[in-house]
Length: 382
Ligand SMILES: *Cc1c(COP(=O)(O)O)cnc(C)c1O
Image (tube, rainbow, N blue to C red; front, side, top):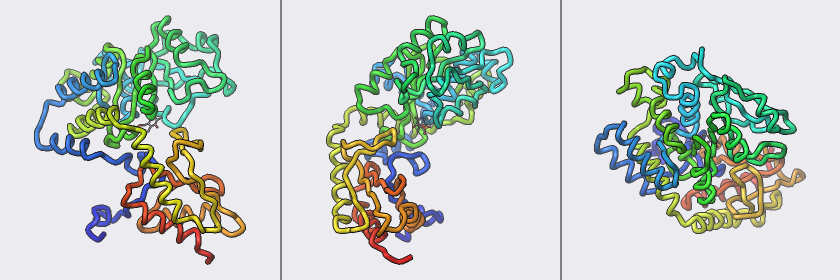
């Protein structure tokens, strides 16, 4: 433990019982992904060629017209929206985020506002809400579209939210008016059919985050129409270094390791037996449960914590632990003690319940996790 790399740097190791979160470092790289990244470390490549050719491999895997590795889904949003504003014009890309004389409005349905939409503003776009919290009509959208419209931004995980216009309808309406649609599908990587359906949709640009498919935390990908992927390529750090214009994407740099890591992770993700993967999550949850069976302060049940952060019965990937306020310390206190301990145990706090997500917990960590939970839930001091 003393040789632990985090300790050497003065940080505490974390047992991650929260799931895939950028703030905890993303996901665990498989041996196959790690080997690809390690191999890339031993040899150089032209980043321009590597980004083009790996993009071709990725587009083939997903059945999309074209694709490209990006520095995360949020990097894809910046580069994609920059492409929609400048439409491949290098001089315009050099001026961003100054959008004088360029279409700079990105439309979003009011009910679609979510955590990452502010990233759209980085290349200089103005995010324009369409409709109300009750919903958006096609008339609302029609009156919002103008010559100032650069794109419509659509978070795919919110498709069919009550009162909103569905994705297909928005895309066909936008295309009748020659407006591109950018889709954030960052975590819709499973089921695989759904991921491919999105990648093959009529949207102009669709992004995914590598963190959700066992890829590097700083990786992601964008796919869609050839012309738009080419326009995205003109915004990036390679274009800055090798092209004529000092374009906006220079700070969004990629390692060659990350590029091969994203490609390897996607390849593996599409080949993975996800039933086996999910069964392993359930097995870990059941093992943690064994540590808590006779803890009177807590009522643990096996549940599914979804990517939308809601609880459902299955597939089992977590323990939902409801604390009895008469016997247990407040859940917020237990959560804080676990988080600030060493090793830090990080999980979800929901009212008077704790949620232990086992997707990112390794088999080796189960005993330490179960023991820590048990000891904090049976402690009667205070
Ligand atoms: C994580 C996430 C992002 C950002 O992805 P990065 O690859 O971390 O940049 C964007 N949108 C959604 C919905 C996400 O969950």
